[in-house]
Length: 58
Image 1 (cartoon, helix red, strand yellow):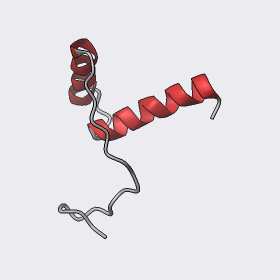
Image 2: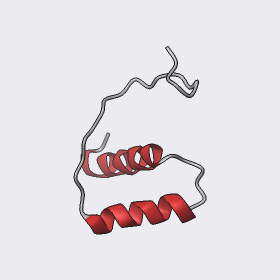
Image 3: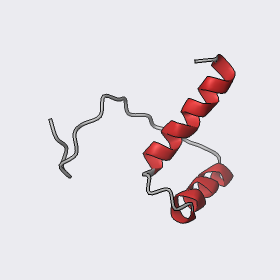
Image 4: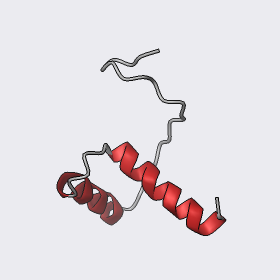
């Protein structure tokens, strides 16, 4: 199934987060000036993946 912009739908879950403003601001700056080409969702997914790998060894 495709979403409204024509990309395949992700196998995922919605998350509603309330995070500290300074962290949100840093994420916004990284997204805007980091030249990664990734969406904010992808940036957060990668950050969580690194955190979980480091803390939980998987």
